[in-house]
Image (cartoon, rainbow, N blue to C red; front, side, top):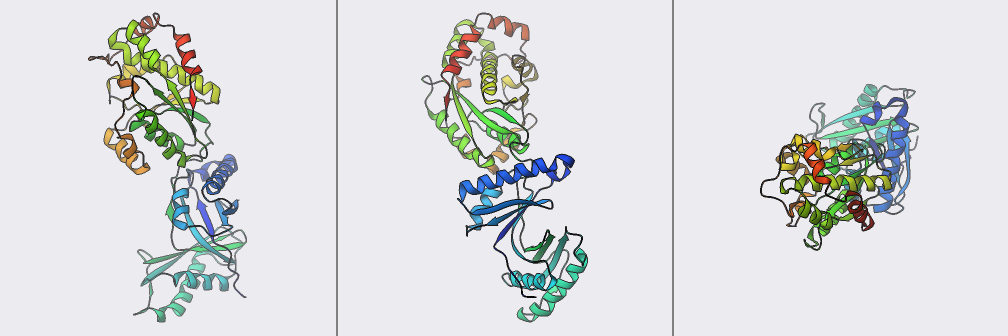
Length: 396
């Protein structure tokens, strides 16, 4: 039978989604939609069709696009365990063998293996039988073209030809690219991430996105007491993090008036804790507006004075929403390593004046008592201060 090659195809595999039982289709549909949106955003009209087929997402490209550029996009889509650029052919052994020979001819190798996966159990040969028959064909037809011939190596081959028998087609490829894993963004609801401009909060954002939550970013600034450097850094960080989710929104909240009131009317040792409690209140208002279900911070236990268990407890008692801390158990080296990996580190370490470093006492409280904190807040017009910050909120 004459071989019928299809257009270049991308096969996206997942792992955790496959464990979702009756809800699996819901997760698959969200992953499919996220893939389609990101490809259309970066390569307009390139993805003619993105569909679910037998435990994988298949992308048919409508027009040529740079594979390396597509890889950079797909690698950052949560939910994909790995993906591959494949050639499709008829689901018939003659066509499969010829296609395997063709794609192997593009690579120099001395040893090879065939790795077939038969999702369609009606196909007449088992996976092992496909491996044997295609491998024999390659040895017969390819061996003479290589100096010294080629041979099979199942453990550590120079080339591995993957064959997937799925739906009504066979797909073949030589290379798998690792994806980001996790769950599709948007499957777990929405959160408000406090994005400071430092190293920790972008990493916290990354990990919450990986668990399928979509993120709205909230940054507090103290202009005119600080420069605009923190704003510009945060905008850049939000831009980097946008590669991990379909849509990104950043809010900028003025904080200097609240800090001045706290400085004038509150005990110096409690300033940082009071700052953080006001941030949580404002974040709650933003969450209510955005229909978000939790607040996310980059806090790491014991890293700074405000991040002791006593202070964390005192800070979160003002919030009715859950406060999630994805990097709470990470040390600084681990956070830095992840920041470098996801591309936020170089921006985060640029110098800037953080609002929480403004008007900070020499000896901040490390073991706050909630009664003392609440008593200090009696001197502050909490509702009006929060309302004014919300009124002057800017959206990017």
